[in-house]
Length: 493
Ligand code: AHR
Image 1 (cartoon, rainbow, N blue to C red):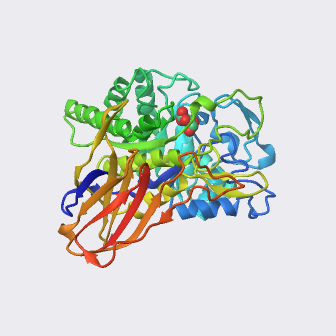
Image 2 (cartoon, rainbow, N blue to C red):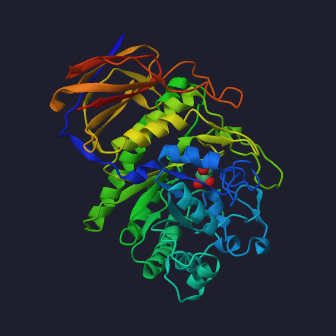
Image 3 (cartoon, rainbow, N blue to C red):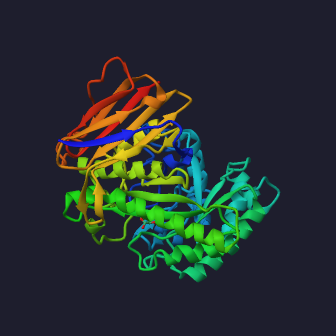
């Protein structure tokens, strides 16, 4: 059996977790909005057409902010098409996803939906076909108190009080050659600065996120990031990072995805520190990892022009959930620099929640690691001394144990998240002596057939199980981690 050890010291702190790390993303893409969160006439829909069965599952996830309205969709979207009387709204071609956008749902509807769901909005302005002027007008529409053209129009459209959207993305993946009106780093950097200036003049309490690399696979990474940070250092608050992983045929390499994600963040920390030094600045640039997930991009097929097509509807296995869990721990372990992270996406489109049009809703396998991260990942992330066996993956020498430890002083509890990516059982020794005596409260585990998938016929094929607890009070203990398994160990102090 493999052996690993975590020596956990309560004073070895990485950072307090920002609650925006538990954010997600809803794009006008496929069935994320239409027949996802919004389906007038559905038996579970409220008077506004919001699906309550879906909202309930979103609420259970404890999502903080939801990024909206895109994504690639953003770069061709005119937000003005989505306001005012629904019957007057134009039907448009969405060139990003080759679909027809009915505009029956826009910023006012999303605001009402968010209020009901108890989530905050992470807004986004179009830096593809959109101009800095359009971006300013959107901020005026959303956040200006009243007495001007756009703020009065908002009141006329049903929202007398400002929507007060305080967090904004300046464009989406503008480094991607697939993006509508893609720009190079110099052109994007200059445009982002001008948009940010206008937006802040209208509301100086907002925070903004500039586009970083769409992936570590981009040819322009990490030069893009250096240049964008150099342009925007004095104007924006965060740089965005995006990364999706898929199984390219080797399960172990796939399970090791967290290693690549960790290096991505580490590299951009170095790049951000370089820019800070160059600027003789005092501010650390922090990150918004506003798209992360498993996504089988190779499954994408051409489709005809239509409204709300069934696209990007990945069905996740237990293996996908394990990979996802590893990524969630990397995000926690970088809580000192990653302040915002959005699980991309939330409903139907590469999502933890999956609906039938007119019918049922299920939780996908990745729902659970996100739920646990959001529920038990609040507090202070600690930096244990880790001893773990390693093996060679496509990323080089790879730890077989991925872990994250969070100490919640409010509830006086410690949570150890652990992932064994090896094909053998692992004994994990935990040294908790710095906390005195502890009691084990929960041991949740996800393990089993790696190909198991939740479906409408078998919605509980992949669910977490409660394992027997170590009894009594103790300051050290050992747990057995099955091959390829995810664990949440909860201790009260
Ligand atoms: O989340 C799906 C797509 O992935 C988003 O629209 C885009 O930003 C990214 O490439």
